[in-house]
Length: 148
Image 1: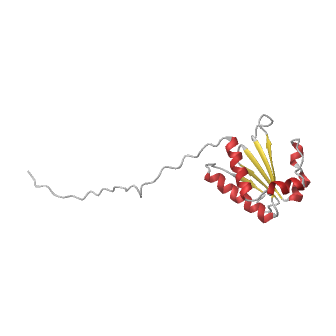
Image 2 (image 1 turned 90 degrees about the vertical axis):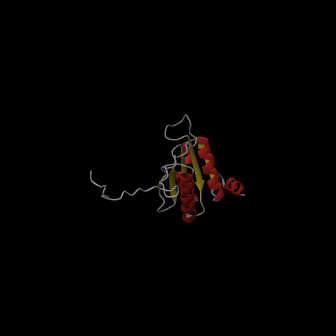
Image 3 (image 1 turned 135 degrees about the horizontal axis):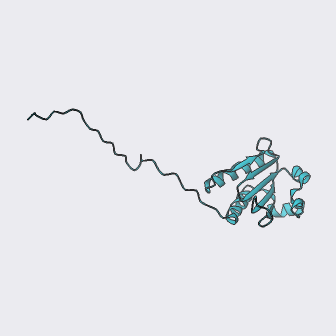
């Protein structure tokens, strides 16, 4: 019989709970009305003007709600869009698509079941997308009442 020889050492590595990789967070599935409420609250927090909610359920397949609002200027609109996108991502939305952020006179935020249009007042008046859905633009007195 031959004596035992050490041929090498075996090293084991155990991960502590702090260093272990964490599973990816499972995104929450927001119901359309909850998503709409979150967006309305964000726009209210950011002092959006003339917020109009259009119920599209049953009228179209691309969204359940469309929200149209105005900002005071391009900087205000860009800030509202960026904050809204961040809040939507924190709420669990995987993808929030935005168009028009570079010029910020009309920013479209696609949150899936809710589409948000943020306009400069004069651009909103020019395009008047509310009329396409059978609604009127908010009047200046409506805007003052909504922002009070």
